[in-house]
Image (cartoon, rainbow, N blue to C red; front, side):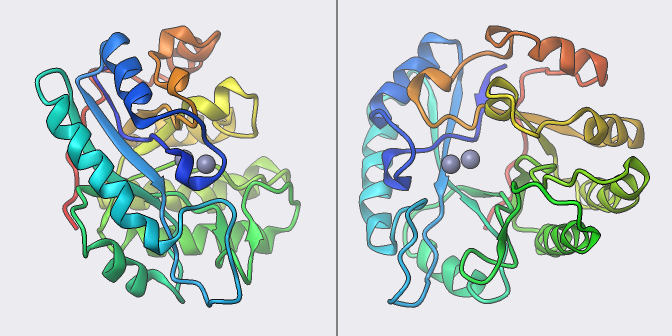
Length: 256
Ligand SMILES: [Zn+2]
Ligand SMILES: [Zn+2]
């Protein structure tokens, strides 16, 4: 695996380590491409402050830091500047306007909240409600259809614990869209390593049978997370079980 496009920084308030440490660990572990994709700042109303993402005024420092490191390390590794972004109705256009004021190479979609952080629910909270599942799928597919996202992070973040048939009926729409729009689906190493509800057998067996394309994401919130799949117990067995080939893990980025 030569590339990882899912890397955070301390600005999101739940990651640790310096950018330099992520980069040096990536080089040490054989990566040729390291994309930073910290949680995107959202243009929320002034009376709301999010504790899980940088604020808009930090975009400048985020980009300047990464541009300097990109030049410093250019002989050893390609550094990319991106964001992990929730698609929302209320904030998407304005958010794009803000991040595009500075250099940005790509965005990945991570649908953590439905319909958004202020008015919605956290996708990873356990639910049996089919309406939650439907809302998650609808919002995710709508975001994918913008054509702006280079890949879909943890596609099965939604923690639906209801019947397999219902899960399949709805989640297959995400897989169909990923195939139609050529958007790879991420297999998330952090989720696997920390035993979260994702990546789940039931999602990847559907996606694999339908013929989706996959990409592996470290989802590094710590420099040590920038590691090869073999370093995580059981992860390669999971990939093999679902017939997911790793390859060099380099994908075509969709330009903004
Ligand atoms: Zn995070
Ligand atoms: Zn992430």
